[in-house]
Length: 357
Ligand code: ADP
Image (cartoon, rainbow, N blue to C red; front, side, top):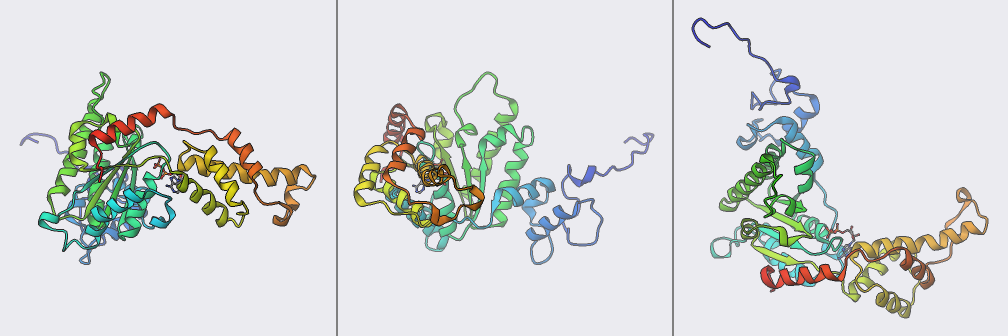
């Protein structure tokens, strides 16, 4: 404003939702226009002195709130024992990321770990479960974000959300940031319609990764994809360990059936039955197996109802246990979701870029 210019009164941003936090001491009494829920959320991130950490001060409060409430999972309830098979991946992940998160003092210098892990393979094979198990086993905070939601739901704000994500994670160390469908964020395709905003989003993401990679932060980025061939070279370089998460072996498929049925007290199949089901489910993913078991479990229920028992009066004892015939029927309904052609692509990519040992 020039000397003769009109006086322009300061305007508070609507609902405190669009600007940075004007006063870092948010637990004080100042009226900063923040909603109660946002204020509470920020207070939880404040240090013992009641100050908001430096890294969060220029971020938008409503994004910090979104990260804390929707993206941060305080109790990722998965352990290694919940995951069938994948022994190779479990061993690599334990050495490469869990030990360093538990003992940062030992994993320094030459032993300093990579900060980026890529899990690739067909959908429904346990990549998300592994991400949660890492956080569970390493007692780390788990952040889950789907990259496609960043590019669709958060158009224009994605960049700021990424900054908020890494900012909150750095206040919640050790932390695991799991980015699902990471290919949609770090893809090499330069489609004609690529928006300026998605290019900026990608740059911001790589900058954040660079930032924590060079520092002493205990943050691990886990990217998951079922289209690894779409990742560009910069993404591959930052995701130093790349683990193939294949379809479950026959043993793992048996384990999934047994485990799910036992949990519900419905397991009565013989070993021979299991061998037959296993042969028939070659090519099924872990999530296909789960759907198959669910469908098979409907068999006894449908049968009891067809005998005239009303659903409201049905007791658990009225239903027989799940049999091989139920699985036979379910196999007609639940087909494998991954084609053989796709498997070839993963195996090729694994040979070229995967961490084989
Ligand atoms: P992805 O992230 O690879 O697409 P998820 O980890 O989300 O797959 O798995 C989807 C569901 O399939 C899980 O919730 C689980 O019920 C089942 N599942 C997949 N793989 C396994 C596995 N290896 N062991 C046990 N359950 C599995």
